[in-house]
Image (tube, rainbow, N blue to C red; front, side, top):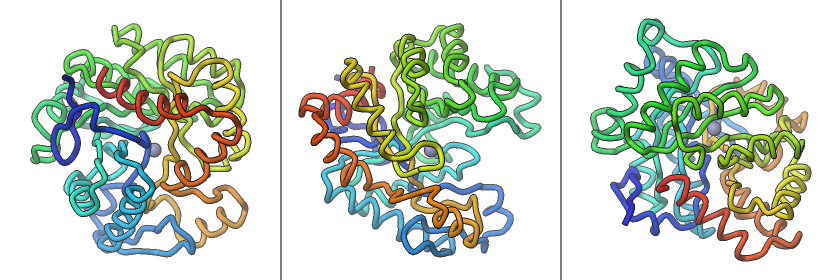
Amino acid sequence: MSTVETVGGPIDAGQLGTTLVHEHLQARDEAVYSQWPHARTIAEEEPLHEVDPDGAYEIAARLAARLVELGVNTICDPSAMFLGRDVEFMRRVSDDTGLQVVACTGIYTYDHLPQFFLTRDPDQIADLFVHDIERGIQGTEVKAAFIKCAADEPGVTENVEKVHRAAARASNRTGAPIMAHSRPASETGPRQIEIFVEEGVDPARVQIAHTGDTDDLDYIERVLEAGVFIGMDRYGLELYLPFEQRQKTVVALLERGYADRMLLSADHCATLDWFPLGVAEQMLAAGLAKDWSMTLVPERVLPELREAGMTADQERTMMVENPKRWLAG
Ligand SMILES: [Zn+2]
Protein backbone atom coordinates (compact mmCIF):
# COMPACT_ATOMS: atom_id res chain seq x y z
CA MET A 1 0.00 0.00 0.00
CA SER A 2 1.58 3.27 -1.00
CA THR A 3 1.82 6.16 1.40
CA VAL A 4 2.08 9.92 0.93
CA GLU A 5 3.91 12.25 3.29
CA THR A 6 1.88 15.09 4.79
CA VAL A 7 2.86 17.67 7.39
CA GLY A 8 1.07 15.46 9.91
CA GLY A 9 3.07 12.39 8.88
CA PRO A 10 2.65 9.65 6.27
CA ILE A 11 -0.87 8.66 5.26
CA ASP A 12 -2.20 5.94 3.02
CA ALA A 13 -2.66 7.34 -0.50
CA GLY A 14 -6.32 6.34 -0.24
CA GLN A 15 -6.77 8.84 2.60
CA LEU A 16 -5.89 11.84 0.44
CA GLY A 17 -9.51 12.19 -0.64
CA THR A 18 -10.65 15.36 -2.38
CA THR A 19 -7.47 17.28 -3.06
CA LEU A 20 -6.65 20.77 -4.28
CA VAL A 21 -3.18 20.31 -5.73
CA HIS A 22 -2.03 23.91 -5.79
CA GLU A 23 -2.84 26.25 -2.88
CA HIS A 24 -0.48 28.33 -0.77
CA LEU A 25 -1.16 28.77 2.96
CA GLN A 26 1.16 31.76 2.62
CA ALA A 27 3.56 33.04 -0.02
CA ARG A 28 6.30 35.47 0.85
CA ASP A 29 9.98 35.92 0.35
CA GLU A 30 11.84 34.32 3.24
CA ALA A 31 14.89 36.60 2.88
CA VAL A 32 12.78 39.74 3.30
CA TYR A 33 11.14 38.46 6.50
CA SER A 34 14.39 37.19 7.88
CA GLN A 35 15.94 40.66 7.49
CA TRP A 36 12.84 42.74 8.24
CA PRO A 37 10.59 40.64 10.47
CA HIS A 38 8.18 43.57 10.87
CA ALA A 39 7.44 43.72 7.11
CA ARG A 40 3.75 43.36 6.37
CA THR A 41 2.07 41.16 3.81
CA ILE A 42 -1.37 41.34 2.17
CA ALA A 43 -4.35 39.17 3.07
CA GLU A 44 -5.83 37.98 -0.21
CA GLU A 45 -9.42 38.27 0.90
CA GLU A 46 -11.95 41.04 0.50
CA PRO A 47 -11.39 43.69 1.53
CA LEU A 48 -7.66 43.40 0.96
CA HIS A 49 -5.70 44.42 4.03
CA GLU A 50 -2.21 44.36 5.43
CA VAL A 51 -1.30 41.85 8.08
CA ASP A 52 1.79 41.37 10.17
CA PRO A 53 3.46 37.96 9.98
CA ASP A 54 1.50 36.68 13.02
CA GLY A 55 -1.77 37.65 11.38
CA ALA A 56 -0.98 35.46 8.40
CA TYR A 57 -1.67 32.36 10.48
CA GLU A 58 -5.22 33.37 11.30
CA ILE A 59 -6.09 33.89 7.65
CA ALA A 60 -4.56 30.60 6.53
CA ALA A 61 -6.32 28.69 9.32
CA ARG A 62 -9.68 30.30 8.51
CA LEU A 63 -9.40 29.28 4.87
CA ALA A 64 -8.25 25.78 5.76
CA ALA A 65 -11.21 25.32 8.12
CA ARG A 66 -13.58 26.50 5.40
CA LEU A 67 -12.09 24.00 2.94
CA VAL A 68 -12.73 21.19 5.41
CA GLU A 69 -16.37 22.34 5.71
CA LEU A 70 -16.61 22.24 1.93
CA GLY A 71 -15.44 18.62 1.84
CA VAL A 72 -11.84 19.18 0.81
CA ASN A 73 -9.56 16.72 2.59
CA THR A 74 -6.12 17.73 1.36
CA ILE A 75 -4.15 20.53 -0.25
CA CYS A 76 -0.71 20.38 -1.80
CA ASP A 77 1.19 23.54 -0.85
CA PRO A 78 3.87 24.18 -3.48
CA SER A 79 5.60 26.90 -1.48
CA ALA A 80 9.27 26.10 -2.04
CA MET A 81 12.41 28.16 -1.60
CA PHE A 82 11.69 31.85 -2.40
CA LEU A 83 8.01 31.43 -1.47
CA GLY A 84 8.74 31.31 2.24
CA ARG A 85 8.20 27.60 2.80
CA ASP A 86 7.57 27.11 6.53
CA VAL A 87 6.54 23.59 7.50
CA GLU A 88 5.89 24.46 11.15
CA PHE A 89 3.34 27.02 9.94
CA MET A 90 1.74 24.41 7.66
CA ARG A 91 1.72 21.81 10.43
CA ARG A 92 0.02 24.22 12.83
CA VAL A 93 -2.70 25.00 10.29
CA SER A 94 -3.19 21.31 9.60
CA ASP A 95 -3.27 20.31 13.30
CA ASP A 96 -5.75 23.07 14.13
CA THR A 97 -8.15 22.48 11.24
CA GLY A 98 -7.86 18.84 10.18
CA LEU A 99 -6.96 19.80 6.61
CA GLN A 100 -4.21 17.49 5.33
CA VAL A 101 -1.33 19.48 3.88
CA VAL A 102 1.27 18.03 1.53
CA ALA A 103 4.57 19.94 1.50
CA CYS A 104 7.25 20.12 -1.17
CA THR A 105 10.91 20.73 -1.71
CA GLY A 106 12.43 22.67 -4.58
CA ILE A 107 13.23 26.15 -5.78
CA TYR A 108 10.75 28.64 -7.16
CA THR A 109 12.74 30.88 -9.47
CA TYR A 110 12.25 32.28 -12.96
CA ASP A 111 16.02 32.74 -13.31
CA HIS A 112 17.82 34.16 -10.27
CA LEU A 113 19.79 31.78 -8.11
CA PRO A 114 21.94 32.62 -5.10
CA GLN A 115 25.69 32.20 -5.48
CA PHE A 116 25.35 29.02 -3.39
CA PHE A 117 23.57 27.32 -6.28
CA LEU A 118 25.54 28.92 -9.12
CA THR A 119 28.65 27.09 -7.99
CA ARG A 120 26.91 23.75 -7.44
CA ASP A 121 25.84 21.20 -10.04
CA PRO A 122 22.41 19.60 -10.41
CA ASP A 123 23.42 16.54 -8.41
CA GLN A 124 24.54 18.67 -5.48
CA ILE A 125 21.26 20.59 -5.60
CA ALA A 126 19.38 17.30 -5.85
CA ASP A 127 21.11 16.20 -2.61
CA LEU A 128 19.29 19.01 -0.79
CA PHE A 129 15.93 18.04 -2.29
CA VAL A 130 16.51 14.37 -1.42
CA HIS A 131 17.28 15.36 2.18
CA ASP A 132 13.86 17.02 2.46
CA ILE A 133 12.16 13.98 0.94
CA GLU A 134 13.95 11.29 2.90
CA ARG A 135 14.89 12.92 6.20
CA GLY A 136 12.73 15.99 6.74
CA ILE A 137 12.35 19.70 6.09
CA GLN A 138 13.90 22.52 8.11
CA GLY A 139 15.05 20.28 10.94
CA THR A 140 11.62 18.69 11.41
CA GLU A 141 10.42 15.19 10.64
CA VAL A 142 8.00 16.58 8.07
CA LYS A 143 8.95 15.14 4.70
CA ALA A 144 8.46 16.64 1.27
CA ALA A 145 6.16 14.65 -1.00
CA PHE A 146 6.91 16.40 -4.29
CA ILE A 147 9.47 18.61 -5.98
CA LYS A 148 8.75 22.10 -7.27
CA CYS A 149 10.50 23.98 -10.05
CA ALA A 150 9.47 26.81 -12.35
CA ALA A 151 9.88 28.38 -15.76
CA ASP A 152 8.20 31.66 -16.66
CA GLU A 153 8.63 34.65 -18.95
CA PRO A 154 12.44 34.45 -19.23
CA GLY A 155 11.98 30.87 -20.51
CA VAL A 156 14.10 27.87 -19.66
CA THR A 157 17.30 29.76 -18.86
CA GLU A 158 20.53 28.06 -17.85
CA ASN A 159 19.68 28.45 -14.16
CA VAL A 160 16.12 27.24 -14.65
CA GLU A 161 17.40 24.22 -16.57
CA LYS A 162 19.80 23.42 -13.75
CA VAL A 163 16.94 23.45 -11.22
CA HIS A 164 14.83 21.25 -13.52
CA ARG A 165 17.68 18.72 -13.85
CA ALA A 166 18.15 18.75 -10.08
CA ALA A 167 14.41 18.17 -9.61
CA ALA A 168 14.51 15.32 -12.12
CA ARG A 169 17.47 13.64 -10.44
CA ALA A 170 15.92 13.97 -6.99
CA SER A 171 12.74 12.47 -8.43
CA ASN A 172 14.67 9.57 -9.93
CA ARG A 173 16.47 8.93 -6.65
CA THR A 174 13.37 9.06 -4.44
CA GLY A 175 10.32 8.39 -6.62
CA ALA A 176 8.86 11.79 -5.64
CA PRO A 177 6.76 13.47 -8.33
CA ILE A 178 7.48 16.88 -9.85
CA MET A 179 5.34 19.99 -10.13
CA ALA A 180 6.70 22.38 -12.75
CA HIS A 181 5.28 25.91 -12.84
CA SER A 182 4.95 26.77 -16.54
CA ARG A 183 3.97 29.75 -18.69
CA PRO A 184 1.87 28.77 -21.71
CA ALA A 185 2.24 32.29 -23.18
CA SER A 186 5.96 31.51 -23.53
CA GLU A 187 5.30 27.84 -24.40
CA THR A 188 7.67 26.67 -21.69
CA GLY A 189 5.85 23.35 -21.11
CA PRO A 190 7.28 21.26 -23.96
CA ARG A 191 10.89 22.27 -23.15
CA GLN A 192 10.38 21.54 -19.45
CA ILE A 193 9.03 18.09 -20.32
CA GLU A 194 11.93 17.48 -22.68
CA ILE A 195 14.40 18.01 -19.84
CA PHE A 196 12.54 15.63 -17.53
CA VAL A 197 12.37 12.98 -20.25
CA GLU A 198 16.09 13.40 -21.05
CA GLU A 199 16.78 12.81 -17.37
CA GLY A 200 14.67 9.65 -17.42
CA VAL A 201 11.68 10.81 -15.35
CA ASP A 202 8.38 9.02 -15.97
CA PRO A 203 6.08 11.74 -17.45
CA ALA A 204 3.19 10.23 -15.48
CA ARG A 205 4.85 11.67 -12.35
CA VAL A 206 5.13 15.16 -13.79
CA GLN A 207 2.55 17.92 -13.42
CA ILE A 208 2.84 20.91 -15.72
CA ALA A 209 1.25 23.58 -13.54
CA HIS A 210 -0.65 26.56 -14.98
CA THR A 211 -1.34 24.88 -18.32
CA GLY A 212 -4.87 26.19 -17.77
CA ASP A 213 -3.59 29.74 -18.30
CA THR A 214 -4.29 29.19 -22.01
CA ASP A 215 -7.34 28.07 -23.95
CA ASP A 216 -5.19 27.05 -26.93
CA LEU A 217 -6.19 23.41 -27.20
CA ASP A 218 -3.43 22.65 -29.70
CA TYR A 219 -0.79 23.79 -27.23
CA ILE A 220 -2.47 21.91 -24.39
CA GLU A 221 -2.66 18.70 -26.41
CA ARG A 222 1.00 19.09 -27.31
CA VAL A 223 1.77 19.12 -23.58
CA LEU A 224 -0.61 16.23 -22.91
CA GLU A 225 0.95 14.08 -25.64
CA ALA A 226 3.94 13.53 -23.38
CA GLY A 227 1.74 11.77 -20.81
CA VAL A 228 1.98 14.38 -18.06
CA PHE A 229 -0.68 15.82 -15.76
CA ILE A 230 -1.72 19.41 -16.38
CA GLY A 231 -2.68 22.00 -13.78
CA MET A 232 -5.94 23.84 -14.56
CA ASP A 233 -5.06 25.64 -11.45
CA ARG A 234 -5.42 29.40 -11.49
CA TYR A 235 -9.17 29.95 -11.29
CA GLY A 236 -9.78 33.55 -10.28
CA LEU A 237 -6.55 34.91 -11.74
CA GLU A 238 -8.22 36.74 -14.59
CA LEU A 239 -4.98 38.40 -15.69
CA TYR A 240 -3.74 35.09 -17.08
CA LEU A 241 -7.10 33.80 -18.39
CA PRO A 242 -10.67 34.74 -17.45
CA PHE A 243 -12.77 32.29 -15.45
CA GLU A 244 -15.26 31.49 -18.23
CA GLN A 245 -12.49 30.61 -20.67
CA ARG A 246 -10.88 28.37 -18.06
CA GLN A 247 -14.18 26.56 -17.62
CA LYS A 248 -14.77 26.17 -21.37
CA THR A 249 -11.27 24.76 -21.77
CA VAL A 250 -11.80 22.17 -19.06
CA VAL A 251 -15.16 21.19 -20.56
CA ALA A 252 -13.57 20.85 -24.01
CA LEU A 253 -10.79 18.68 -22.59
CA LEU A 254 -13.31 16.53 -20.73
CA GLU A 255 -15.10 16.00 -24.05
CA ARG A 256 -11.81 14.95 -25.62
CA GLY A 257 -11.31 12.36 -22.90
CA TYR A 258 -8.65 14.02 -20.73
CA ALA A 259 -10.37 13.76 -17.32
CA ASP A 260 -7.52 11.52 -16.18
CA ARG A 261 -4.88 14.21 -16.87
CA MET A 262 -6.34 17.38 -15.32
CA LEU A 263 -5.81 18.77 -11.83
CA LEU A 264 -8.10 21.59 -10.65
CA SER A 265 -7.02 24.28 -8.21
CA ALA A 266 -6.83 28.06 -7.77
CA ASP A 267 -3.15 28.71 -6.88
CA HIS A 268 -4.53 30.94 -4.15
CA CYS A 269 -2.23 32.45 -1.55
CA ALA A 270 -3.88 33.11 1.81
CA THR A 271 -1.39 35.95 2.15
CA LEU A 272 0.98 37.26 -0.49
CA ASP A 273 3.74 39.87 -0.24
CA TRP A 274 4.28 40.52 -3.95
CA PHE A 275 2.50 43.87 -4.05
CA PRO A 276 1.99 46.73 -1.60
CA LEU A 277 -1.61 47.29 -0.57
CA GLY A 278 -2.32 50.19 -2.96
CA VAL A 279 -1.08 48.27 -5.99
CA ALA A 280 -2.96 45.11 -5.00
CA GLU A 281 -6.15 47.17 -4.64
CA GLN A 282 -5.66 48.70 -8.08
CA MET A 283 -5.10 45.27 -9.60
CA LEU A 284 -8.30 44.01 -8.02
CA ALA A 285 -10.21 47.09 -9.20
CA ALA A 286 -8.85 46.54 -12.72
CA GLY A 287 -10.31 43.03 -12.67
CA LEU A 288 -6.95 41.22 -12.83
CA ALA A 289 -8.21 38.88 -10.12
CA LYS A 290 -11.82 38.07 -9.37
CA ASP A 291 -13.20 35.87 -6.59
CA TRP A 292 -9.69 34.44 -6.28
CA SER A 293 -9.86 32.18 -3.25
CA MET A 294 -8.83 28.77 -2.03
CA THR A 295 -12.54 27.96 -1.83
CA LEU A 296 -13.31 28.91 -5.45
CA VAL A 297 -12.99 25.38 -6.88
CA PRO A 298 -15.40 23.68 -4.46
CA GLU A 299 -17.74 26.68 -4.28
CA ARG A 300 -18.06 27.63 -7.92
CA VAL A 301 -15.86 25.74 -10.38
CA LEU A 302 -17.21 22.27 -9.59
CA PRO A 303 -20.92 23.23 -9.39
CA GLU A 304 -20.67 24.99 -12.77
CA LEU A 305 -18.79 22.10 -14.36
CA ARG A 306 -21.52 19.73 -13.11
CA GLU A 307 -24.09 21.92 -14.81
CA ALA A 308 -21.98 21.87 -17.97
CA GLY A 309 -22.12 18.08 -18.02
CA MET A 310 -19.14 16.88 -15.97
CA THR A 311 -20.06 13.41 -14.69
CA ALA A 312 -19.57 12.28 -11.09
CA ASP A 313 -16.92 9.88 -12.41
CA GLN A 314 -14.99 12.65 -14.14
CA GLU A 315 -15.16 14.79 -11.01
CA ARG A 316 -13.85 11.99 -8.84
CA THR A 317 -11.08 11.32 -11.34
CA MET A 318 -9.91 14.95 -11.29
CA MET A 319 -10.36 15.70 -7.61
CA VAL A 320 -9.40 12.38 -5.99
CA GLU A 321 -7.77 9.91 -8.37
CA ASN A 322 -5.44 12.22 -10.31
CA PRO A 323 -3.85 13.81 -7.23
CA LYS A 324 -3.41 10.32 -5.79
CA ARG A 325 -1.84 8.92 -8.98
CA TRP A 326 0.43 11.95 -9.37
CA LEU A 327 1.61 11.79 -5.75
CA ALA A 328 1.73 8.04 -5.18
CA GLY A 329 2.31 6.61 -8.67
ZN1 LIG B 1 1.61 28.60 -6.94
